[in-house]
Image (cartoon, rainbow, N blue to C red):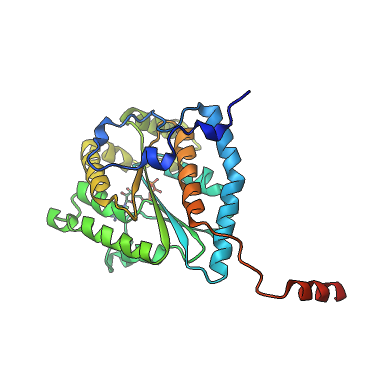
Length: 286
Ligand code: ATP
């Protein structure tokens, strides 16, 4: 008899993927499937099974927000070009009702954004109670691209680690459960994915010549990601590091992390705030 797919998590995703300070990011096996003992087909079956549960949990969260609750969830996605952030949004976040999702991508700051501190645009994008917030890139770019591209002097960007942690502690204390997922593909896999963008007319729009510039600075990005993980993985906002060469695994892992986060809120359905029998009688008489 075929094994039930969810038994194939030998180690739960949140344990298998949680970043431990000091782990060598350069030694990450990008094709690995940490915690998961199954194959691609098993993973796809489990994702299909999780879909209704994830949708149900998100609807409970939404109902909670509509009835005065203060909880919400923020999924933070970090990763270089082609790491698959967009795929997670489409295939994982896409499993829930879009009406309950607040999605925000963080690109190069606009002139208006530059007039404020770097956390201004982030605060404005935080999910309201009951929502699932999704950040495609995030405030962490302040210690990634800003560091690697030399957009600020070192003693300035170095201060951001503590600021990011303080900010996230404040966000968590306000009722927002933070789930931070960093996706990593190997340099070869990135090359293949970029080559595909250059080969396919339906992918040209995704290609940005500056992606090649970032590729030439991979060692600098690796160092920046290493320090970001080591210094901003905290109790209230831990990083989960997902090897992403296998897209199906990255999506399965993100589904599992998100499902686990929503489950941990332990939200029931809000009780009726009206007299059910009286309303039934009114309806019948109407
Ligand atoms: P992605 O590359 O994430 O798939 P995209 O190609 O659509 O997205 P945008 O989202 O418009 O591009 O912008 C992403 C770019 O913005 C990245 O190159 C990123 O490094 C840059 N960026 C993000 N935050 C900052 C920041 N604080 N300062 C400078 N550049 C930033």
